[in-house]
Image 1 (cartoon, rainbow, N blue to C red):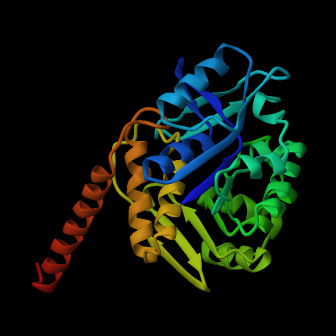
Image 2 (image 1 turned 135 degrees about the vertical axis):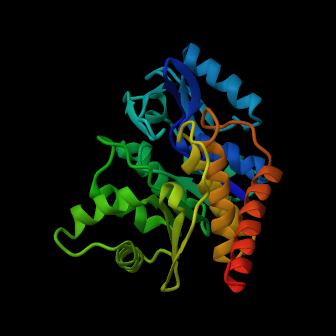
Length: 313
């Protein structure tokens, strides 16, 4: 797969420690480890954090051809607060370097060795109007590219009209169950809420081929072709959840590209997200063998339970 990943790169500051992150970067690292060709379009400041970010990207094996060094704003940072369950909240300083890119879609097209199969984007960077304009231009110029929209709603950096416009671009949308409920409350008010009904309405409204809703340790739900299914998650000792959803997104797209069944896609993406949540930082070391071992452990456990049920144990 050839992927153009767009949006924020920033330093997550967690309990005084700095971790390079931002959903597009985290997604890119995992996607590249899965064997895809990824170009990351973003910006860092002409400052020490920016230089440190470029060194870190190089060490992670990411291409930096489309990473701009800008003087108009500093490298992005996010103060991350973890609750007792390991769930994260973010305070993000704006404007940041990723907000002041100077991008010509024609130049991007010429510099890419081949047109991307997918453009990955989120909400945070596109809350800044020039970034959204750039995204629409890229989608238009790089047709017939498909679009993966990973919502990642951050308080103070989104609004309903914005996510509706971004959803209209999307082939695939990923969000979490809390985000789905917030959208329903804003969009549909007092209508009774179910996750399946939200997926049906959102899919119909924006002609989305697949909607995936993550539900933490409970797993995920997939809605496609008028079919809604839920798939259980994995129990792990959570260290922090930063980057887990981004890894899940990479696993989801990986399975889609390979034409896997919904169940196989969900098992793989859930396992990859759970593995990241069990380790410190958004882009920890992992192997695909570990991911498959987690899946095999679940399937073996399910098989033993089914045999026990069959024998009345």
